[in-house]
Amino acid sequence: MRQFSDRRRDVCLIQFETSWGEQNVGRFVAVGDIHGCSQTLAKLLEILDLEPGDTLLSTGDLSSKGEDSRGVHSQILELEQRGVNVIVLLGNHELMLLAMQRSVGANVDLDAYPESLFRGAAISFLMRDNETWATLKSYGLESADDPELWAFRHDDPQRHFDKVSQRLNDIDWKLPQAHLDLLCRCKTHHIERNCLFVHSGIRLAHVKMADVHRAVDAQIQDDARELCWNRDSLGHQPGFPELMVHGHTPLSYLHSFVPDTKPWRDDELVFKSVIHNGTLNLDSGVFLEAGHLTAVEIPEDGHGPNFHFIRVPRLDPVCKDRLWHLNYM
Image 1: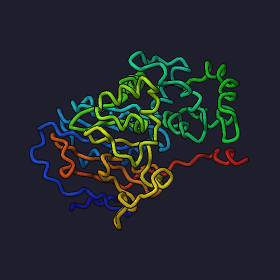
Image 2: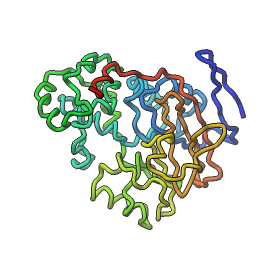
Image 3: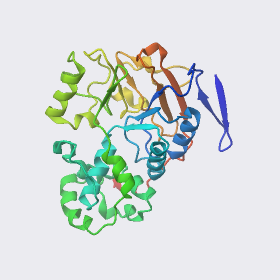
């Protein structure tokens, strides 16, 4: 095991020893939810040292919660410009951000997605506790701190959206076009190396199907939003042979959804990503005080015992909401 010291604070970055061999053979790396933690992502990318022809897949949720969503988007674009094959899944935060960008008149091409995918997403964007305001602030949009724009805990989200929707026409919340184009290239899912990659999961009725393509197609036809929001498949064995790799639910939150969380616990890290019951959760809650960012290098045959995990403790400051108290009034 190698250790990388960091002068910003008294932490060590842990990279588990791997046998990566030659560096120009099309490595495939999947990384969990980044949530605006640009400094932590930068350190992970430094460790990975990806080259042209390699692939980096994000499970989605590049933005919100952390302080520098803009910096995360910029780093992903820089990887593409260097010839790294980038695949970004459509997380619920991409979904909300794209819906809101359409609401404020930004140039977003969403024709590749089923329209049902965005049902209610702009309303969800304006719910303060979804922490989408952090994305806007990273782009220098200080109007995100205007309390009149947000629905708080005791507000009716639909009624609030109807009240402020006219005002949205006059708000300059548009993101840079290159960043919008990146978001519009997000995928609802990806199948490669004997893995199904989705942001959150799929409904239990579909995850139990024997064929992965039919399972995903059935979920998209039924309700495509479940690929970005669903949690009811947590802890359940998929019926298809492919490993389901996802994010969305921080490992430290599993107690709310899975009765037995022992498989994800050890003495070194209270919760860590492991292959268990045909699934792999890469969301390590990097935006949390004790969070970290997890990536996994997946061999060409997708054989689980040969997966190599890299974990970087959070380097970014924890983002604070100065309007948090309005949720408790």
